[in-house]
Figure (cartoon, helix red, strand yellow):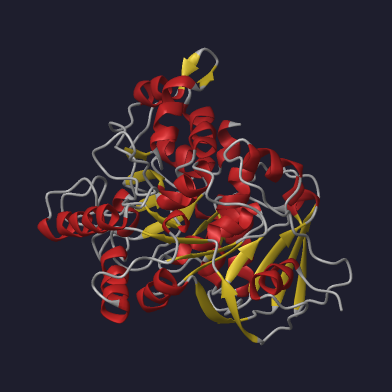
Length: 432
């Protein structure tokens, strides 16, 4: 019987020839990811259930990336990192990317594929809801809690239910002013924050094929904002080239069967899409940027696992080149590799860094999650009052970026950059 790509990956991971939606199956885990917020809790569960001196099931399949509360004087945040550091030392984990060392990477969901830990056809669990990002490379990837992660740490497996698949087919010629962020915000706006509860969100079509890998990551990253269990895109030549440039480990580029049944399908003509925003306080509050041009903003923020990749900064720089920002504009590269790219990538003879400096942006931050989720009071870019923010991040819940009085609008790097220049929500077509 035909299977979707999600079903095929889980079938292989469970050792079964076939799985159906709703089946409860044990799956073997290829990668377990954790970070400084949930890592200590995961370690606590592991040591409580398996013993204080127990060894993890596979040292090479555990990746620990501190990234959330890193550049802060907060004692509790520092203690969390100390806990990770001690555990990694005791377990002799090769993939612990410690802050303050040359190994430090930055945001886990951008670093994980950059370091070759994401491969098509594999099963990835992470103690972070945006683990679904990695479905962009043809993996089954989803977020879990500390209890499940602690169990995986000791056994290398987990019991899960096979999710039904919702298919989103996007065709049509994608305009230059439309990005992966506009695509996923439109979809979430249509189906709501619970429209894909415990479902695999499968993205396909000519418009998806035309996107580069990092733009696909943006789309899959926000599957969870519609309640999705995972987001996934079948691997193609771009996927395989990206993965092979990052790792020499073998992988199986799994693809779904042509006749696989899905629970529901949506079809879109991307050529008709408009630049958009998600209004406070939900990612589903879709509105076109054009129709919100009356909304003034106090600051712009470009960063996070959703909007802090090098492609995101290139998009922003194309808008900001030769312009001046009217509001505080914060820049947070997702990883050290992205930060390096700001100094080497050029547009019209200027590096991205030079473009941002000349535009009057704030000093570029160290790679981390920073104010995407608020953080301690000394976090870079954190809101403190009633600032109206337009941001490339993935969530705009009340208090998400710090202050409960600071409303957040989500948008693409193009729209955020254009809005920074005008000091109000601005359709990027005004600068293209």
